[in-house]
Length: 352
Image (cartoon, rainbow, N blue to C red; front, side, top):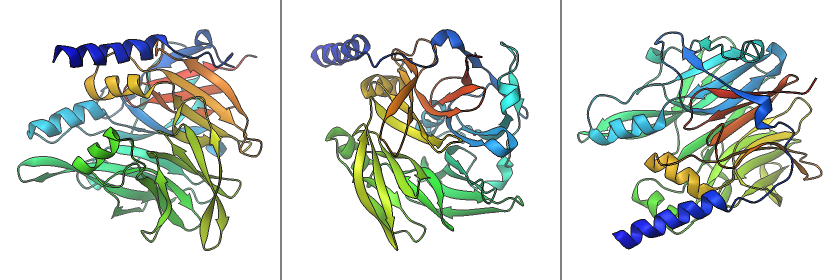
């Protein structure tokens, strides 16, 4: 036991001290500050704003959030239902207001309208239709234990909610043509997913509207979007963006884009470039995400999908300001990022 503890500690210390220099970032930590988000219904401070989706036309940001570690702890105890989260819409102006001012926000979907509890994960906004889609990680009692049961949910511009079951390892979601595609970060769940983690398996992929696999053998398929008629998938374990060109009726894989970190969620900028949140160290992320130990680094890059070039927007390799950023959006006024484990958002002001 002592040897195992020593080994794990040594691995963490190395991850904490062996960070590589990736160059100067556009936004320094001095340009950035944390903004607390308050749930207007419960009064609770929002933790775990895991994914973001911009609505540039209406100058607002959709935020999916719930406290994953708290929900998982509650599920393991087989007691009361794990706490819920919210799917929020927040104006850009509110986020860039005076420093230190918290932002109150209400969920755009009523918790009573979501089966098995509202715990939104990956989200996507379609500016062409006004539809907002998300992966919801509901919990159901099965044999006295809580088990997660994901759904894909779409809210159209009229507020109509449509829900359907999806893969047990569903992670992110995107509107593709007239359908909804999702990423599955593992091939299976439970012990099968654990085996895949231990051996670094590549069982992730993209699942189309009809349930067919559009992309396969991805090392933890995470963020998903469509850019320049390509399907872009964040392959977290591979530290790459996997790219699939449209070749009706399916997609054909192209040369992937290598990144200076492990990509999580992806968003598009107003000019069609990709903004990706990266994890500088997956070891540090695992320690904090699973064990609540230490802080994980945050790195955000902007990628030109045509040239394949990436620019560092923000870099906090030890998580000193913001731990484990998992999504980011760049606006005319600056950068906004959320985290799977940290509180609130960070907002970085662009130089005037």
